Amino acid sequence: MKSVLGILRQNINPDIKLILSICIALVLSTQLVFAECAPDRAQLKMGNSSAAFDVEVADTYESRAKGLMFRKSMARFSGMLFFYDEPQSVSFWMENTLIPLDMIFMDQTGLVVNIHSNAVPLDRTAIFGGNDIFAVLEINGGLAKALGVQVGASLQHPAFDQKTAAWPCKN
Figure 1 (cartoon, rainbow, N blue to C red):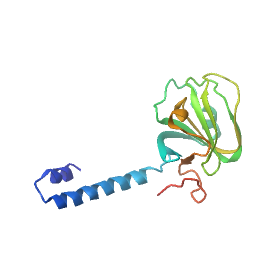
Figure 2: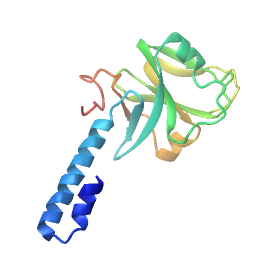
Figure 3: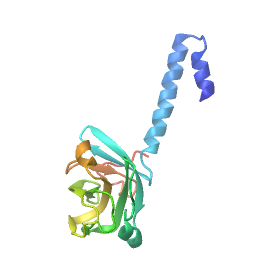
Figure 4: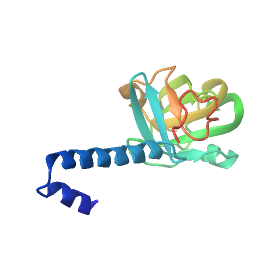
């Protein structure tokens, strides 16, 4: 990359500089498109905007049971993404969870069907997410509202069946 930037700084034909700049932009944007859909990354689309999260996937009984327990903090655009083998009724609680969380419940296509905001740390009250839930994204409390996440938003992640996903991966 340094050598390409060096070329662009040289005194060469402006048309060639423009073409090189466009090529670099295309390569970088292609890399971003392919980086969008990865097991440790989830993207929420709300109308014309979107937000990306670095996620840990909880897709076993043990990892779902532990969730985000005992964590004292979480980076702003991080979270935990829970997946189930098949859609089902789910309830969450905040036992041993030290940070407030927003819980975003999705169906099998990645469509948001329910949101619970600012779950109270250490509270053992069951939070019912709904029936036919396939995935749940937990993010920092208050962030869903700040980003404008509402029922009807969609989540992009490779764990959804890409043939039926509301927002399929591009790669």
